[in-house]
Image (cartoon, rainbow, N blue to C red; front, side):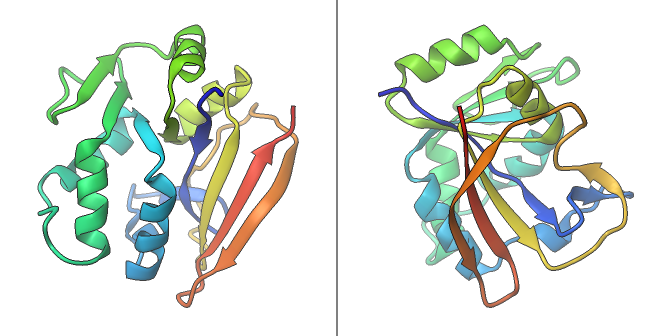
Length: 185
């Protein structure tokens, strides 16, 4: 069975992953949401990132994976997972288990999916837009925060189209809603 490519953004209710000033503090998951994310990402073998998201996620390399709770659990997962960063401007990766690719090659990603036993998690709207246009995305795991930010970086760029089927949902105590959609083929 081929691995899945899962797009998993944390976003505002109006569809932004960062506000107009590039801030995204309102998407930071509380311990309950982070524990849920850890459970889902245990099957992920590789993260696919654009440069900006990779630079934001690098902080997990510095967090002690032995600390108790969801922070330690996610740090352990992140540090043990392979990462591919797609960037024309990043000089070199600064974290272990990280490979730099200058361009997103849909055929290469399709080959990786076909030969991997573990899923791929993708973050970053521009990268996800390319993957959707290439027909590579299998699922969306959306974490919708109860906030309207009014503008900024959209969770997906224009031109990404897919028919989706809702397969799971969950509401958290802090008002975040998780929606799991499968892409219909």
